Length: 182
Image (cartoon, rainbow, N blue to C red; front, side):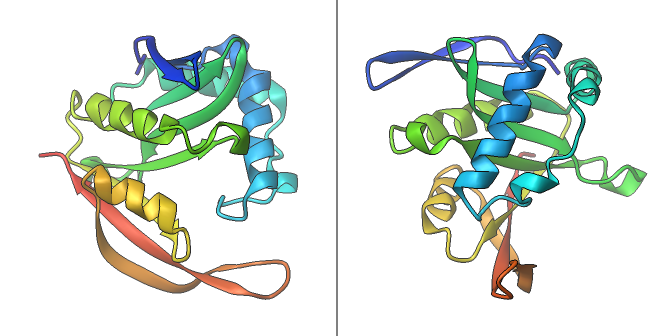
């Protein structure tokens, strides 16, 4: 699904929110790797971002052509600085009414309201589809993200103990949250 371009003012700088295009493949990959380096709250370690660059343009094209799935990239000029993705939760008929949501923003662009703007745009865009639920998971100690999600209307529906095991053998629980759109 193609998301129309929208401007957001961040610390006096205009940030563009829009769908990433196939020609944005490298900056898309760069932001995924960098955010994984900057925070353990991401689902993957940087070295697990093994998707070859040649696979990304077709994936972006398929997302643009989807009826329900979408990406919203935040761009500072040509550089992607964050992304929110809304994608299938499962392919079975019984799962088609819900999508999963994930967001990442480069650390240098945090604390200025960009996450709120991106999440508001994602929820607004999801409401224009036939999707009934948005689902996400968040680290139990990521209070800032939990606050943002609750502000958007998400509610906790479950918790998976020790969902994430880190390289140093420490664990974190995952809080599952849902936003009912319909």
